[in-house]
Image (cartoon, rainbow, N blue to C red; front, side, top):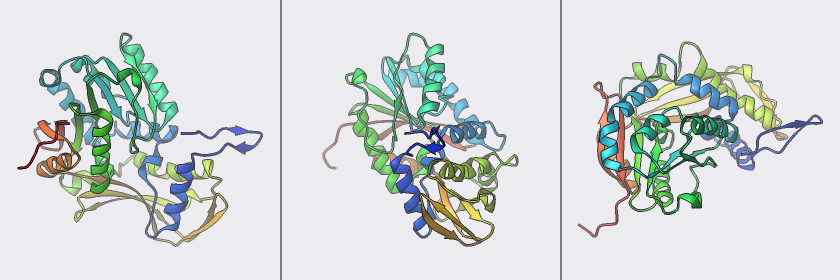
Length: 325
C-alpha cells in the first residue's frame, strides 16, 4: 500500500483501491467503507492500544488459550511448518505460537507496510534463527506466497476473530482463498469470538477511554490526508451497536449535524443522524463456526475454549476431497 508523503506541498498518490472503495462507499446507500482501510500506521497503533483495554476481552482470552494449548498443538501439527499469518499487525500473539510449533519460516501478511516491517524486525530479533519473510498485501485477495516456502507444509494463523469482520459469504470466500494459497494438507489455526450478552460485547467496541472511537474516526482523518478530503471530523461520532438478527457488532460513524464535504474533488452531503458503516464483527456459536470452516474447505480437527466460553481457537485441516456420501 502506498503511503502519503508530502513533498513541495503536494500529497503523493493514494492507494487506488482505497480511493475507489471510499468514493463508492460514500456514494452508496447505506454508506459503508470496508474495515480494512482502518489500518494505516496510525490505525494499526490505535488497534494495538485497543487490545490492551480492560473492556476488550478477546485478546487476553485468546492469548491465554494459545499459551495453554501449546503441548497439544505441537503434537497435532508437528514441527517444521511454515507459519503464514494473515493480518499480522504487531504479531503480539505470534511468539507464543512460534515457540509451540518450531517452524521452518514465518510469513507475516499485512496491509500496513510500515507497521509490518517494524513488527517483523522485532520478531527477527527475538527469533534470530528463524527465516522471517514479511509480505505486504491485502490478504482478502488471492495471494501467491513467497517461493522460498513453496515446498514446506503450511500452518495458517488467523487470530483475533478477524474472520468476524467479514459477512459470511465473504468469510467463506476468504477461507477458500486461504486454502488455495496454503495448499492441500495445510492447517489453519483460527480464533473466533463467541456469541454472548450484549452487555459484554458493546463495551468491548465502545470503551470508556474512547480509544475505539479514535480508531474509527481515524478513518476520516486518513481520507482527508490521503484523498484530499475536507470532511469535518468533529461533526461525526463513533457508534457501536449489537445487531442480534445478524449476530454481529456494527461500528458506524454518525453525523451529528448536516455536513457537506469533498473527497478527491467529488462533493458529498450527509444529513444529521445518517451513518457511514465502517465495520462488522460477527460472533459465532460452536456449530456456526464449524459450518463456516467446512464451507470454506477446512475440516475442524480440534477446538479450545476458555472456561466461560467467550472465545474459541480452532485447528482445521485442508483435507482432500471425499466422494459422496
